[in-house]
Amino acid sequence: MSLSQTRDDVDVEAAIDGLYRLDIAAFTDMRNALSKRLTATGNRVAAEAVRALKKPNVSAWAVNQLWWNERGLFEGLLDAARQVREAQARGAGAIEQQRLTAERRRAVDGLLAQARRILETGGRAASTGLLRKVMTTLEACAATPDALPAPGPGRLHEDLDPPGFEALAGLLLPQATERPTPPAAPLPPDELSVARDRAAEASKIADEARIAAENAQIELETREAEAEVAEAAARTAARAAELAQQTHRAAKARADELRAVLEQRLESLRLAQAEVVRLRGVEPL
Image 1 (tube, rainbow, N blue to C red):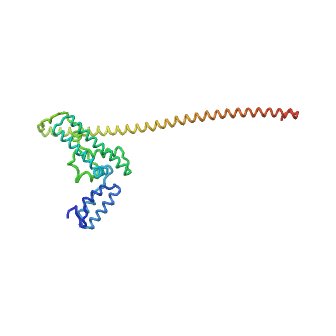
Image 2: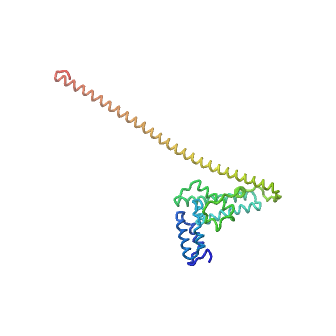
Image 3: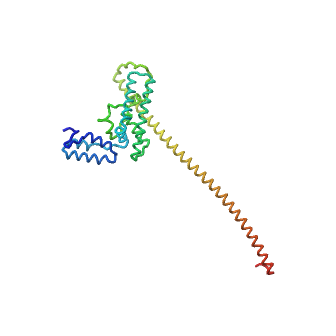
């Protein structure tokens, strides 16, 4: 009996695909339920395989959803990356390589926009860091599709490692030559080791530069947001000060009015007292 078939006609592969299409919150319970069902049908091998399946992290889950729900866009990215590699292999001109590289970039941007929608629809914040992880996995899928874990990018449980410097440069940087250069002579073992070390160091430097640039972008966005908040607070404070001045002017005007009324009433009181004195012929108390 194969892994894909059980005694009650359960299509195990389809059932596993269904698990990775679920929301993360439902994954563990549904995985365990499927494993118990397979155990009950006598397919212990499949049951153990299902029980060993790992719950995806959020970014890997987002990539899985792109594979299952945005297959056209996902395959468009893989096709665009393939065309870039083929153009470089045949020594296509810089203009053609630039055009193909731009198409590949648009494919990544389109998938990232859908990933943001999927995350937000599922009640999860589409943070810059989370989308960066999604992009890294998409880059890895595009750069080395043959190295994807079986049966494909729809069952990921963790982020894929970013493509090496050479693969990433091949996808992003069009070649300037019109014709392929002849293959270089093999390096001696010692020189080959040195070249590999230098390539590894260059890859590390490139990764550090990319991370530094991304951190700088995040810092810029944070500072811009803080500036907007400060500007809004300043506008609120200015409006409050203006209202306070208006209130002060109104209060002062009202006080002047009351003072004038008081003076009039005091004068009327003095006149009334004088009249009392006149009528009684006595000094006021």
